[in-house]
Amino acid sequence: MLYVVITACVASGSGICEDHYIPLYADISPMACMLGAQAEIARWKEVHADLDVSRWQCKTDKMIEAAAAQQDFEAKPVRARLK
View 1 (cartoon, rainbow, N blue to C red):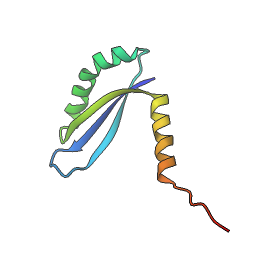
View 2 (cartoon, one colour):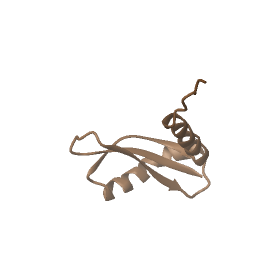
View 3 (cartoon, rainbow, N blue to C red):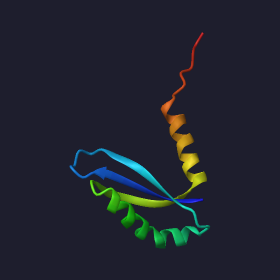
């Protein structure tokens, strides 16, 4: 499955940003996602008028899972114990 991943920030300029995932249920190619994403973003923006879209990209669920696993790895450093 493909997702349009929108990074949106609070319009007040506070610097608070979050990623939002819009699933695309149709079995489409990454290129079709790139071409059709703008319409999805426009619909999303109508509902979330208080947020400014700073960037967007198309990602597969495998790409999202891999990024989450990498963040988990980076967020949990392991200290070596010396005897």
